[in-house]
Length: 461
Image (cartoon, rainbow, N blue to C red; front, side):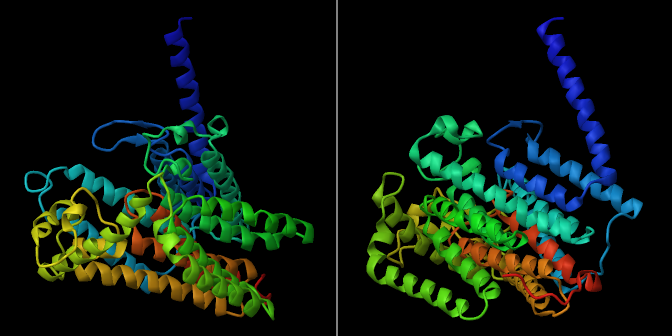
C-alpha cells in the first residue's frame, strides 16, 4: 500500500468514526456539553491551530463542532428531547438586537461601496450569530444539576490549563506549550504576554477570569480537603491573569471577583474580604497609578501610553459619527472606512490620524457607531435583562444551590465582560461573546424552568 493510499484509508476511517459519533451525539448527547465542547475547541483549536480555505468561510475545527451541535439540537428538538421554554423579555430583546445587526449588515452594498463584504458577514457570524446559537441551544436544553455543574467544572479545569500555559509562555518554556501555534510570534497579537491558544491577551484574560470564578463556585462540590486544594490553585490562576499584562483584564477580574464574593460569602467574611479588596485597590491606584499607565509590556513602554491616548480619539470620532447617523449608524463593520472622513477634523487637539489603521477599541461605541442608538439600546437591554434574570434566580428561596451558583457565575462574568467591552471590541473572535452568551443561556433557561430547580437549600459559598 502506497503512502497516498494509506492516508486515504486513514481519512476514511476517521471520517466513518466521526459520522458514527456524530449520530450518537445527535441522538443521545448532552447539548450543554456540546456547547462547552464548541467553546473549548474555539479557545484551544480555533483558526490559528488549523483552517482550510473553502470559499468565503474558512473551515476550522470549532466550526465543524458547531455544525454538529446545531444538527444535534435540531434532531433532539424533533424527537422531543429538548426542553422548550416560553420566550420572555430577554429572548425578544436578543432577537430584536440580532435582527438590527443583520439589517445593518445587508442594508448597504457588500461590494463596490464597501469592499471586503465577506469579512463583514464573517464578523457577524462569529461575533454575534454563533453566540446567539449557543444561547438558544443552552436555554432550550434539559438543564439538570449534572450538566449545569459540568459548566463550572470544565471552566475550572480549563482555567488551570490556561494559567499553566501563560506561565510557560512568559518564562519562555516553549517546548512545553501546546498547541504549538502559541509559540509562533506571527500568530495573533500580543506576543510576549500570556495569551494562550487564543493568541490574544485580552481574550485570554477574560476567559481565565471567568474560569477563576467558576473554580471558586465549583469548590463547594468537594469536602474540606478538596475545597482547600482548589483554593490553593487561586494564586496560579491570578498569576496567569497578571501575566496577560492587560489593565482592563485586571480591573474586570477585580469587579467580577467582588460580585462573586459578595454573593457567596456570608457573615463577617463578606465585609472583611470586600473591604480589603477595595482598600487594596485604592492603595494601588493612589501609589502606583503612573506605573500602571506606563508599565513596560511587549518591550515598549511607550506602547501603553499611546494606547491610552488613542482611546480619546476613538471616543471623539465615534461621537461625531453618532451625531451624523444617530438612529441606525453607518452599517455593521463599516467603522474602519466610515471613520476616515472624520480624521481630517482640526477643531480638536486629539491625534485623530493615529487611529487610521485600527478597528474600534470599544464594544459599546462600536455598536453605537455601526448600529446606531437603536442597536446600542437593545444590546444594553439584553445585558440588563440577563442580569435581572440572574438576580431573580439568586433571590428565589426555592432555587437549588447549584442553580443559584450558575446565576452568580453569570453576574461575575458580566462584570468582567463589561470592563473589557469599554476598552476593547470583543466581536472579532468567536470566544468572548460565546462564553457570555452560553452562560446567559443556561441561566435564563434555569430561570424559566420553575419548579424543576426548586430547593430549600441555601446558596453554597
